[in-house]
Amino acid sequence: MDELLPKLRLAKPDTGDKGVIEPSDLFQTPMRAYWLEIGFGAGEHLAAMASNNPDVGFIGCEPYVNGVASLLAMIEARGLSNVRIYDDDVRDVLPRMADNCFERVFLLYPDPWPKKRHNQRRMVNDGSLATYARILKDRGEFRFASDSMDYCRWTLAHGDRNPDLHWMANGPDDWRQRPADMIETRYESKARSKGESCVYLRYSRKVRQQPGA
Picture 1: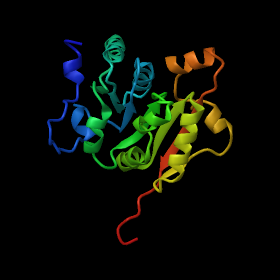
Picture 2 (picture 1 turned 90 degrees about the horizontal axis):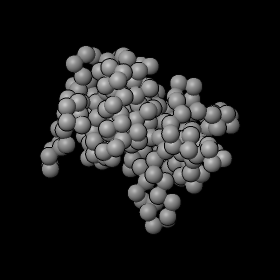
Picture 3 (picture 1 turned 180 degrees about the vertical axis):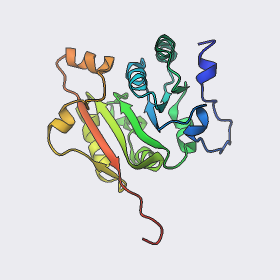
Picture 4 (picture 1 turned 90 degrees about the vertical axis):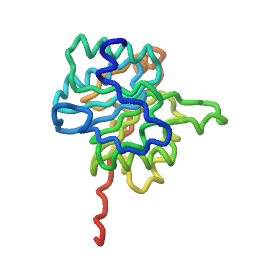
């Protein structure tokens, strides 16, 4: 936390700061693509994906210190140089992320906020999906996973009315089975140990219309 995090940390924006964050500016070496994980938990998914995709630059956002410390330990142990961390609320930096800059955005097992009076705190809503669509490249992916069936229905309802996102499912296996290039997170393992089902939703960013087209 004292030595490695300062080298990887995205600075918290000052009040009124409107500077655009270009992921490519955060890495010394140009990357093939840039992926964002929102709420990386203990970091096992992000670390595995970064290990398996060394030519991709990863930005992970997580406000809880234990999760950040866990990810830092994995980064150090695996010698990863393609990860940057924002150790606070992702909503501080999302509005400043450049348009059309991420190939993938992950939101895995977010807090479901099950009480109706707290639903507005969910990281899926009309405004957040519009932001994810804005920062995704054409044909880029937004990936969502949860063991909360209410949250999955909520996400499907909100995703269905977003004009820029296309649900990629062609059959039941597409939402019942984890994508082959992802790993099981500790949240998923915990849910399955209780006999609960998990749902995986993948959305593709529709190709932007060119001006005058």
